[in-house]
Image (tube, rainbow, N blue to C red; front, side):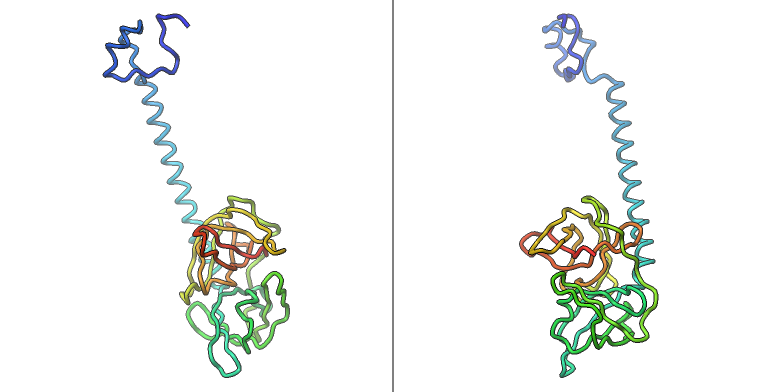
Length: 235
């Protein structure tokens, strides 16, 4: 490189103009040039607009998913033989009067009450028609239950996929939370999806859906040692 030409990406700040002359660079070659600064400003403006557009798109998606999904989400209250409430969880209609939730939500209970998001008693589930204890899943039969339900995704979501969880954390019916799939894990022989969606007691059994509203998993449990470690059972 000749001494009379500055390096291609050299930046001499304005207060270093005199020293640039001493090094053999013409004083007029102060960097960055105006057109570079203009391009950087334009690029940052474009990135900001793109980020805001993505945020708005996610917000619109979340609102539409809430409208479509919440009518199919229920709260489950478990009772023992003495009619004492023993547990609280979430679930969702699969169709045909069937409700899906976690097996640990109903474990040890005599019957389950199925409540709508408005707190109305829809019916009771006296027995399970399908129990998958190793994967912590159960399907309950609800006489005169909702015939429609949520669809299931065809496969596991990729890491980074945006997801939404629906349920009743701490008994707060109709709660919607969003995040991403952060990893897939095999823990104790179970295929689990790790996600950044916040869940807590009462969320268990609620649906985790993708951007088109298909169920990709069932909210399971939270690792209290790691704030970003929430898990759902792969559907």
